Length: 113
Length: 115
Image (cartoon, rainbow over all chains, first blue to last red; front, top):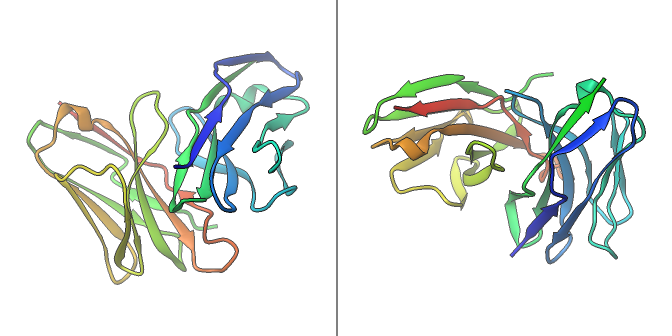
């Protein structure tokens, strides 16, 4: 079946540091890939998405490129802010599980001033 | 922009009681999904509906049932509640438009506490 593996957290950074959260996936077919963010006490917000190989999703300074050859969708941001502190989920849709999303385990990011 | 609405936002129940969670999808979204998120865990898919018909089923206990109504809102009914049902329950909806059907937009969640 489909699966998503994220780098283990928590990740702790200082403000303005560079962020990378690694994500790899296993799926058949042509899945779409997403990053969702969950701020403390809140619901899941769509951060960015990519629907085919070599697509780059971007939003609020975050970027991720759909790499089919390495089955990866790493999240990056050049300069993090305290307000970016949240849990980040790498998510897959399609593949063998059409309709339902397959979540990674989530990575807790804490940014200190 | 309109978002997914869930009610109630918080719910406290006793063991063996019943609970009903409601979800109102974004206008013109015809598919609704339900997820359960335990503390410190990733969301687990429960069930989904497309055009008022059940379209997929995940790890939903037999004590739970759900349906989608003619106005596309959905209700998750939970009976014989157990302590382990305490969790955050998310509803998500996805649009009808081709090319975006796989994108799910989440509501704020209902936090259920079973005592």
